Length: 479
Image (tube, rainbow, N blue to C red; front, side):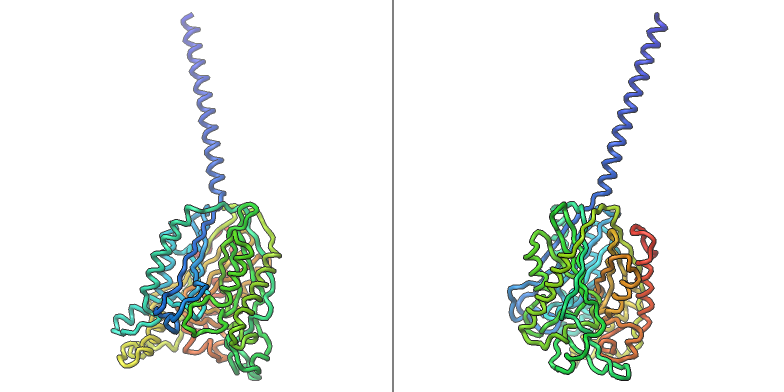
């Protein structure tokens, strides 16, 4: 009996251990499923702040004399549920360059608890708007230049403080993303190529964004990308963010002393009113050699006409949108660090002499602008070329005033994918032409406008190709 009793107790103990093991295993399975579901969850946070300078502050060209109804915005999204958060940001300024661009990316990265290489900051390039370049600002201060004009960075630093706070608060209002949408449509009678070739293949004239010469407006539209692309994020049936991409200089008229988001900002506003549940964020594509000059003589009423045409294209893309289910596993970020070759015309000794010339503040500022980029290149600085992969969509993020040929080439590389491009990232290099464009002449590839060498095409096209030809959305390109 004693033996039977001991054996029965052992059976009870073993049975208890078995059930305990089963329960623990079940708990682990449940936890594992929960973790897997959490890993699949994709969440989106939106930030949006006013970045309009006050009366008396200096913009890219002129001090502010009046502030009107439409504000300049700094808007963006944070995608969480991926390996690390991804941040995309668009700013209604003419350009953010060099250490200014570094500071914006670093601020966003810190606030979003991610790494700088997973942050993309772009401007829309409106001209009645501020500029930011902390490297040039330091050079001017060290040289004792008192009139910093567009390079005075106090306002930009105040924006960075508010931006960090806005991103922190955005996380508290994040939403699930269940679907993405993609749509495209043609924009009619807005974009035209700025570079008018003569019979010898050289550029005979530049058709600027406000062209009063009817003969230049009568020239063919030229090489453009007429498509506006929309990438939308949805929580069930509710759209929560719409990102639009279109390549064109955004000016209708400027030098008014009135901060303005110009016609892309008005188009964005129109679409925001039509789809109010979603924050609308616009990115300028590779529009360095593209403007509205064929369809714009600078008359003030043309601003609204151009805005309505762009908004009509955005509506067409919205109406054409197809939605797809999405999870965090369908989203990835990859980047390539590229060393852009500095232009051979950048004569450091001459630029330093101009910088330190006490008789001409304007010349000093122009020299600081170019020296800032040259010093960065000499110090081994590399520009991050980033790409967001989400489903079969690819969004490329590039620097400078990029020629549209880069955007068109990227789309041709992967016709099986939905390829979009945002340019006007780091504004340090200025215009970035194709290799042949530097031998054709014209403003965009002149010593005044472009601070990179013709070989830049090979560097950027190689970077774009490496990103687009990656084997899978989750595979990062080698840095």
